[in-house]
Length: 560
Image (cartoon, rainbow, N blue to C red):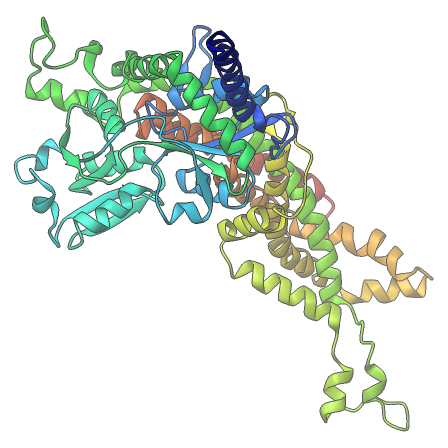
């Protein structure tokens, strides 16, 4: 009996040993059959690459700018773990939150700190990195600001990133100060070092990275915060994806990958970036280095230095991509805008009055007074075109882009593919649609004025020759109108080239996207902006000259 009991006990133990791992495996892998993503076969991640060592651009061994940081390494790890292809979308920090809210991406990775407000629009993974929050200042205010209480003054300006936990901490800990929110950490540091801000709230590891590259930056103190650590934002309601992310995080921590990712990112973020900021790569205070005198220190901390342009030059591939995207945006915008504008101009000038019969008297003539007369004169096409033009011209183009992308196209499923290896169609197309809609409203008035500038007698002559209204418009009116409005159209094209710079806010890799990437990666601020200025000038100035040449050619037959 005892032997039988021992045998049964042994069998039970064996079953338990084999069953528990099997059950655990089943629980762990249960998400694999139910896993869904925004784009089938892809893991789409939104990030803001100005947040070293979390995410930033770095130069690889081939001299090519690539997205780096331990967030990006972890994203690649998770994509491999789930058997998916990784796709990265770069936007501003507040854009990361918007992308998750509209469910345009699967994950948001930008050093996110969990909060009750954010949980309303996204789910959070487990904490994957234990970080902290810091308040920083410049050496100019280091003696005055030694704590958060010192910074809480009405005549002080405190900076924080838009939509971030740091903004919440700034409002909580320095309520009496003037709080200024900005979309980029690089812009906050620039304001701080230039003296426009007296202090700023920044994530601790990010602050330490900037401090290594900007000697004038001082970390005042660590800021208490209930949740010390960063989590991954997951598309709301996608339980299988959340389970997969948590499993991948656990796996990366258990096999030591996460620790390696952090160490490599910290080294990369603080590696050779000194070359753009300090003379000869010398770091003050290191053994064997003499302390710079005041003149050298001023030169080393200058905002515009020839040496910084060499650093920016390493990211030339990003600017080349930005130029290609900007030119494509401008060309397609002009095409869409011109066609739309021509339709709107004809609608505004039409004589379509479907209720005209209401204003007719018994003799068949139109009455000029009375309610029925006003109803009879109502032109719905002209009304719609006029309303469109006035609304578009009275609202900012940035607002229009956000409404088109986050509103309209959130309900439309666009094909997801990449052109030229860097141009994402699902973001480029909404960008040209929004810019085209905006441009169409301005071009409409230009075209309408050009058509009205053609003498009315020519229309009468065309009718007497038996030409239809369409023939008259095509062969008589439009050729002359186009010649008259060519300078205005050229000016609008130049405006479009410059206005396209705001499409980076929805993840289009244009010139300004390259500027922000370099600012966050190389810790240089003014020089990328000067490079962008030169590029935009080289695009706009020759364009205006070419249009002027064709204008002269077309005007040769005119009598002056």
